[in-house]
Amino acid sequence: MAKTKTTFFCQNCGAQSAKWQGQCTSCKQWNTIAEEVIQKAEKATWDISQTNTSATIRASKPQKVSEISTNAEARINTKNKELNRVLGGGLVPGSLTLLGGEPGIGKSTLMLQIALQLPYKTLYVSGRGKCAAN
Ligand SMILES: [Zn+2]
Image (cartoon, rainbow, N blue to C red; front, side, top):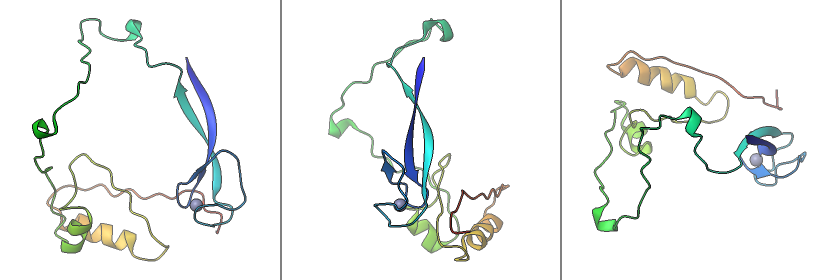
């Protein structure tokens, strides 16, 4: 059984705190602390009844630094030189990138411009969290 635990996170900067506070001690924003439920596994054990018993469980083992592959990750060119630079060479396929910024700064405009220039079908998803300022 998994234990549930609640903790408090600042919705502005992500700082974690053990108790609710009116002001974030990290970014000094007011009313940005929200309680979130965290699932905590009691023990790292395998539930054999729910796993394929023929599956092999490979233990991770230490590797020499010289044996670690340092091949550059494949990157998707966003066709925007500055965005590619900020992303470390472009988007990593299968990755998730969180874009943050002040309201009206141009996040949606930038993303729509990028989506139009990509040679792929693109799904634009936009959302917002609870904001105490509005
Ligand atoms: Zn904060």
